[in-house]
Length: 481
Ligand code: AMP
Image 1: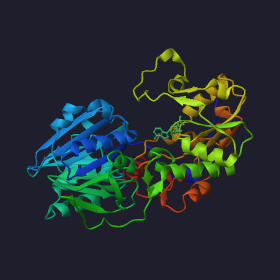
Image 2 (image 1 turned 90 degrees about the horizontal axis):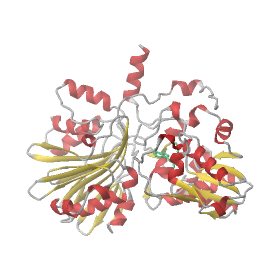
Image 3 (image 1 turned 180 degrees about the horizontal axis):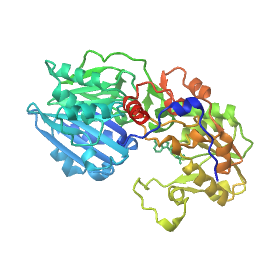
Image 4 (image 1 turned 90 degrees about the vertical axis):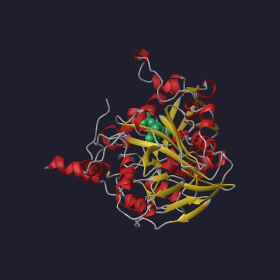
């Protein structure tokens, strides 16, 4: 049985996740100025599928301001077909892929959110979590707003609609100035697209061009798939207005210290993307190299937990001189909704997803490099699998520090209770995983590996939350009183 250690006093004072509202992971895209906007947005969403596999939605608006919307549960490739895309015409499209937890999993929460607004369609796609969503919702509800979804993002729509500012641009500025936390949003009002990032720039958003069309999307891999050219990142606090192929910079949001999510580089973004101006693959290799310096292992080979730790394992192999082996094979067709028969045993989830190549593992001393440990359940199952396959020794290396705090800005992380790094020492975790040795990349090592980029949000490792946790603090105050 794994014993729990008491968190220290400072840790105890930090909040845990106990708001009953969806935690969301998402990808967004807006296409402006292309007659093939629906197809382009569809392809971009397909490239962003890793950012959310639960639902996807697409909205198009034609020159006369007529909107078409199609949303569904599941994967982009299963939701849309040729017939649907052909019916979605117009030069403007907004797309969204979403994954959520905490009761937020239903079609009504799928985005883009679409409303009729002053005789025009307003469609909004949001990546990130707002840290004052509950406060805003309570206030707006008390003023008579009727909410149609559980999602944070709807507050932004209400704030735009209720703004008393004179024109559209100012109403959007007014709305975005009232939300706190993480937001990379693309939205349209009629034929005008707006794109904005919160002042700290937690989540990515990039700007690209394809001929006369302008594309705004979460990651550069979505530009690559449609052959668009990357122009630049949308800057933290920036609000862009895009119309007829032109990009106008509106008044930026009040500035704050930038705080780009470092977990995007560790796990979330695709390795073929450039995020924060940095190659994701390059960052992961650097983490792996540094990990090999910090925690060398006397072993025969290095293996990755595909696909998320491939780059880090290659970096580890490079510095350690140990050969990188494709010793774990991942089944790519599992999906989040795979039915797990109850009698199948506790490591069955892992066995469904991964299978070792026996010849590469049997009798070998292996180093497993993973990108992160969250609950510790995957790694525990993998170690059992490798031992059952005849591995002589298993050395586990993690290409990031122990995750100890929940994310409130748009990465789906469990509560402190469930985070293995939150309540256990490294030695206790080693014991729990039943590995011969365990080593995590240090915080300094991780920061040093990407020191040319940032500044970063590292709250899931340090508990230093950059944007005020308005809802959490309010709830804590209510519980304490
Ligand atoms: P576990 O420790 O069993 O919770 O699994 C950790 C593994 O899940 C990591 O190695 C990552 O590859 C992956 N992972 C990390 N964060 C997330 C997340 N927010 N959503 C889904 N998978 C994740």
